[in-house]
Length: 299
Image 1: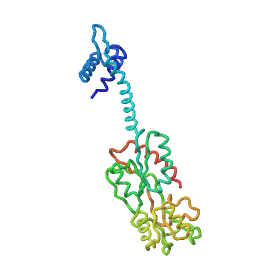
Image 2: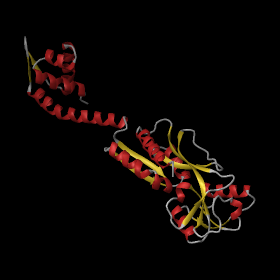
Image 3: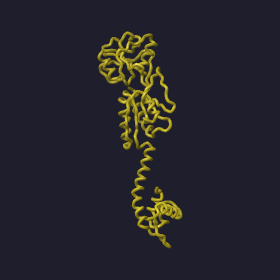
Image 4: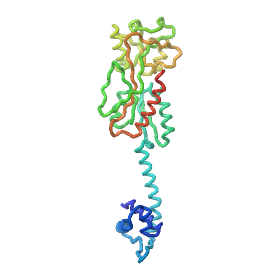
């Protein structure tokens, strides 16, 4: 295989007309240039320069190599620049995992910022629940993922992942507009209500059960969905009440958002990425996600 350093040297010798001038341009000694040319002649099995008493003359083979090497070396320079951008987090592919609430409230601003700052980066989104996303980050199938954890439902984390808390949000009650209760409401006051919750076994459902158990009752859950848009519509239609994270309660005119009196819990939105061997783009993603979360902290 031809050595790119030798190709760059032969091109410089042909362009400058001497070993000494090429050596000065490239920062080598004349002896080093002569040795590189000799090595290249051995590799290609061709005489590249006619040595004369006080000068050299390129052979047609040297001219051919010099002409073609300009094109090849330019491509190598482009590749080197691209690799540098890749290592510096300016080029490549960024694979983000998220769950629906974060996708709605945090990702649009963060991805728009990343796309503007890093035009040579392809950004991909995969949406799922944390139990799916966390192993995919651990296995390098995702570069960074937005996941959540509830105070009362701790999660086991792989040791190779780094976690950054982006946002902590209170749990709030969603009531129909015409509900009998107002102001701060204790969960025990809703013991006889029909409840709308996330799927059985999810962190949100388990958190509801544990909070209600602490107040002496088991909620009667009739409807289950992991889509907070659906939860809000069901509540707004008078089909029940719900306990949801603050971001999940935003923006529905047919429901009332009510604070929980007494013991409550929070949901924490975290960004997870690999501690070692992760994409250099993950740091840029984390910075953009942090800014997006800060802009939502007062919601």
